[in-house]
Length: 336
Ligand SMILES: CC(C)(COP(=O)(O)OP(=O)(O)OC[C@H]1O[C@@H](n2cnc3c(N)ncnc32)[C@H](O)[C@@H]1OP(=O)(O)O)[C@@H](O)C(=O)NCCC(=O)NCCS
Picture 1 (cartoon, protein in one colour):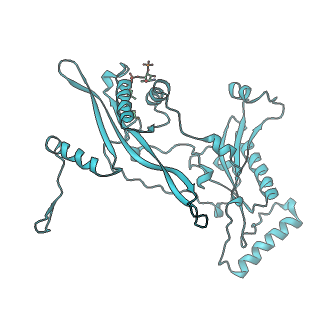
Picture 2 (cartoon, helix red, strand yellow):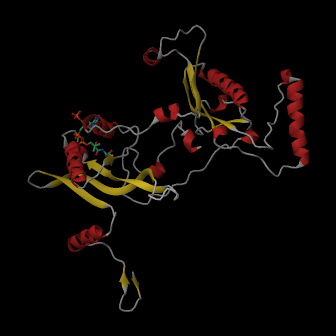
Picture 3 (cartoon, rainbow, N blue to C red):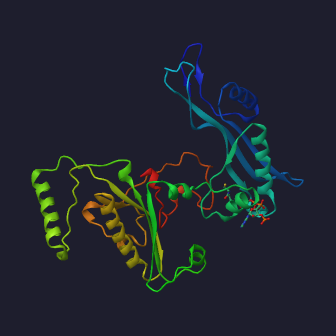
């Protein structure tokens, strides 16, 4: 593509690896903070067959802020970003006929050497949860740790707790005992008090609607045994109790999920939250066990994805845009 700019005519064309590589590298060196990039190949035998590849890049990213007080006491605190050099491993692949011969490991090791030489602070990779070869390679052989910080969620002051339902008669012998020998049926959920961070309010409802809503609450209070659904007070600021980490197993799990939701409802009242909400996958096995009003629920979100690069993210899922949705999802309550 050519754009007429007189003597400074701009031409956009494909990279010619042989001719352009040194000049492109020079350009990258000149641009401060531009990602450094390396691609390695594993060659084998007299025919120099390419049996593996790995790509990596290093970027400078901000990972926090530092507050510094200037010399003049009256001036405001200065916020300085803390930066780190983060390395990414991308597109590691070994030809299927040459797997399990140590080639993947050697490629990762060589890439890490280059990361270190170039001052990278961390190396990072992402793979699908069910990609056992890749996870084993990175966690067992290369000492990467999964970066899902569930501990930080659980320890957060907004986390009200994690609740487990088991049948009457089950004797609790501690977490290890539960994990190694779980009962036939159990259910689990955690609750997060969003009210501490924000409140919501429904505005613009007609007077008639407000009146009907109030009437349902009055009837429910006066005649609770009728179990008439009452519309919560949402026309003035109200808080949410968000349920996440829903799970369970066994023939009685659905009933237990319903019981846990009832418990969460009572907790929400105690915390002064007006509404209990959760988000689950459309195929979540316990979805129907969660008491909900259809009218107040969005049955399904539509997630749209566009694949920008043809040779990225090619684990066992292949093309992510064509992969089937997962049965359950974990919604990080901090992002809710
Ligand atoms: C993941 C992959 C690169 C591994 O390459 P490889 O050359 O076969 O790996 P190595 O021979 O170096 O194996 C190193 C370690 O990885 C783990 N591993 C590799 N393949 C494994 C498998 N099929 N099952 C379980 N663990 C496996 C093992 O811990 C192995 O050590 P060990 O052989 O001493 O038990 C290769 O399977 C591949 O190309 N997969 C498809 C693309 C992909 O998923 N890439 C990763 C994206 S990040």
